[in-house]
Structure formats: structure tokens, C-alpha cells
Length: 337
Image 1 (spheres, rainbow, N blue to C red):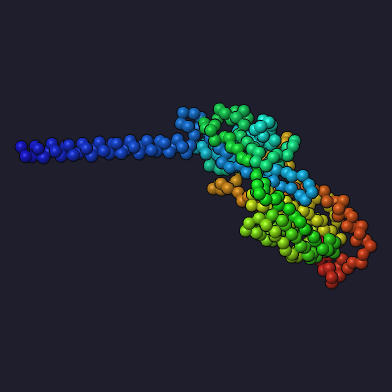
Image 2: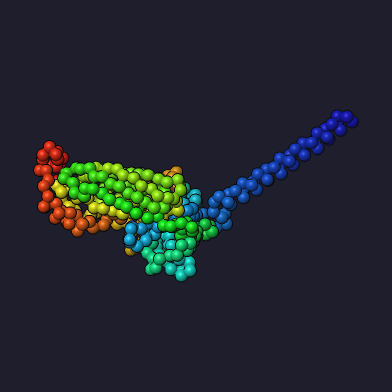
């Protein structure tokens, strides 16, 4: 009897262990199912899933000029399949249901992120704190039938450019001397920015140079020098802690270089008013805010027509004495022509 009792008790213990394992397995499976439902598209719908992961608005203006808004939308393919058809993001002012910008791509590989950077076309300025909505267009190229989770296709952001109890960032002083160089030459500059957080210098063929900063928005000033090879603008750029940028450009002429209306001829950034999205490298999910805006501002300046301003400087230079192109004072004159 004793062995039989021991065996029965052993069976009961084994059954308890097996039952516990089954319950634990069910719990783990349920947790896995919940996580899968949270991390990916719905299991009862299409397998595709593009999601808007970030939206930011940057105010970019020049002293005494109109404000422009640069919107940046990040779209991630969070599904196990590639999106091989086109897709499009539209930005709207919710209060007016008015589309103010579009951006799109021809495809988006699984696990990768595309950056939509759009200069918004606004019929009238937006008030501080006004909302903007970014949405992946469900009607574009059959996107609604492909996308299994429409809940992450829309995201809103408020326009914030300066503190409620502060003032907009402003370039109070910007000066460059001399404004005419003969061949490669050095110019001196000085600047004062009010309510600024960071200040950069931008010159053609050079990376943006960080000049100074303020831990909190305040007065930032300084002076320095930079070598100039090509005719074009020398630009100071400042921003506040909320992402509002302001810039001021002063053209500088190299008298021994043929003046060109533009720095470069830019490739089209949009087709039929739809900006082109750029796909980030695999494993890259974010973009540096300052670098993104500085790059777009550099492209904007490169595309502007500086011919008239440079021609005025050239006419002034005709009445001044200057070193010969191949002299000791200008050893690079011949190469720069």
C-alpha cells in the first residue's frame, strides 16, 4: 500500500507541475500576443504598416522679411514587408481643412524611415500655438487597402516659435568687412543676436560653423574672421530654444572670379508641388534638428539670385586699386579665375 500511496501522491504532484507549466505557457503566449499587437499591425487586417513617428515645425525668417515654416515628418515602415507602391503625406490646417504641403516617396523598405521636409505654403500667417496635422493620405495609390493600422497614420503638432513671456529671436547686428576680396581673402565679421540660443556662420563650400551660444535665450555676440574663395553670401544664422531660426546674409565679391547668379544649380526638390521624401540609412530613426534646418537654409541661399548684388560690388571695385591677379599679394588669383 505504501508504494501505491507514494505513486498516487507523485502523480498528483506531477499533475500540479504540468498544470502550472501549462498556465505559465498560456500567460506567456498571451503576453506575447499583446506585445505583438502593440508593436506591429493588427493581425486581422493587411500586413502593411507605415507610421508617422515624429512631426516638427521650424520657423525660418530673415531680418525684415516674411516668416517661412519648414515641416519635418518622419515616416517608418513598421511592417514585415516592403512598401513598393508610392505613398504621400499631407499637412493641413485643421481649423480650415486646408492642405498646405505634400511630400511623398516611391517606396519604403521594411524597418526603414523616410524624412519628409516641406516648406509650407501658407495663405496667411499661423498664430502662435496653432495646430498643424500630418497624415498619410489613405487614398493615395491604394494605401488604405495595404495599411493594417490606420491609428498611427495621423499626428498633430502646435506651432511654437517663442516663449509666451519672451520675444522672437532677432539679429540685432551683422557686419562683414571687407565686402570685396581679390582672390582668396580673409574677411572680419561681428554679430549680436537677441533672445538667441545658438549662432552659426554659413559660407559656401564650408560646413556650418558654430560661433556661440547661450544656456538660456539671451544676448549672444562676438566677432571673428573667415577665408572667402567664391563670390556669394556670408550668412549668420541664429535660433532660440524653441526651434525658431533667423538669418541675415551679406554678399561678398571675389573680384578675380566670374560672378555667377547662383552658387549651384539645384536638383528639383519637388515634383508638381509634392516634396521628395528621402529614405534614411538602415538603422537610422532620427535626424539632427539643427543640421536639417541648416542644410535646407543653405540650399535656399544657394538657389537665390545674387547676381545684382555682386554686380554692384563689382562696379564699386572698378574705381579702386587692387593687386594684380598673379602677384605675391594674390598667389591664387589665376586658379580662382
